[in-house]
Length: 106
Image 1 (tube, one colour):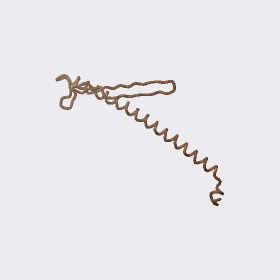
Image 2 (cartoon, one colour):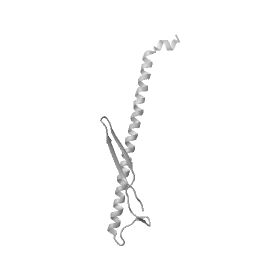
Image 3 (tube, helix red, strand yellow):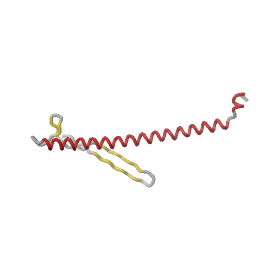
Image 4 (spheres, one colour):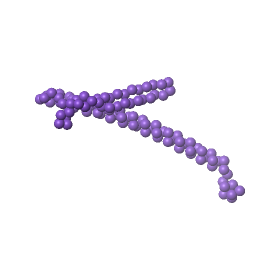
């Protein structure tokens, strides 16, 4: 028997929105020859079970993709902010050091 669950919890605070995703796939089915079990001789129920399984997997993967994208976006924003700070520090160092003094060594 295969059991899986899809769970998504969203927490809100005053200033930020935090999303915590605990994800697994909710499929309760008995596997038989690599297929999900359904009543014998009923093709419709087999298609229904397979459809539910495919839908659960698709929704879970979509949720995970969104979570990964959000995490990458946060990381890229942090890198961008750090680069802006470094660039501004370089510009301020250039403006405080006259080029005459550094070129002549005095």
